[in-house]
Length: 303
Image (cartoon, rainbow, N blue to C red; front, side, top):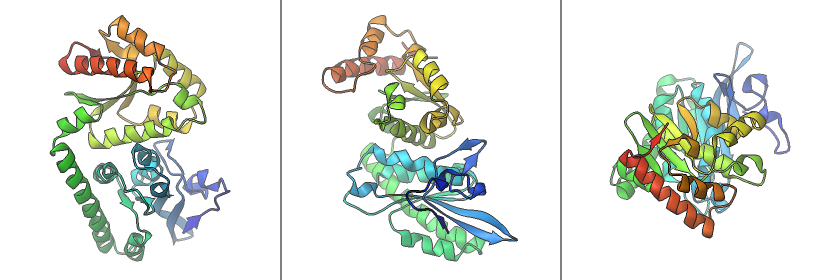
């Protein structure tokens, strides 16, 4: 096992350099909290990358749980076992996370597990040397979390992705998926903001729920100038870097909506640097309703 003190930054080094960060196609994913490797012929062969959090005891009941999903994803993309461990607490694990993990396990080289009991890892560690038994143990957990996801998906959305999309600011089109949100440039430039982390989590949720389609992440309170600014000044920022380098994901802004009425654009610009609450929420909701309708009926086109 490899683990570092909380005060250490060694986890930010690549696993091959003695750290706990996994890279895939030259993209570094978030560092893990722990890792297991197999010592063979004088080499450390990675086996498991684990990201752990006490979020369930810190009033993290919503989409904030998604924000650490990518930390273990680097291991999965490299064909390893990636584990997102949410220690049992007052709140429950978001069922969406289970669906994301199952999809990632189906489409990436490795296996993604969501657990709230560290003991679940024991049979996996004990059977690392036996591929057949190991796969059986991994499948037991995958089946368990898929059942949890489908139960919630069927009850809340009647088993319909169209219903899910309408309730989750998502538009399903023939060749792409549009996920829209009220992200603003300050989310990625102000250190006190956490929305950048959440944006990454929502991006991965959309990608793995609709894997194989191009994902257009539409940030309605941003302009093409904001994208240029962030590309120039935040190119190495972890969250922005992942958003800009994830395959089949494209960042879009209000400037990319063909046919958008100038009055709607002016309203969005008037609140582009404001939190979505109070009067700003009313303005944003009015604009969103109009844009959502237009993108669905074809009167607006996302270029």
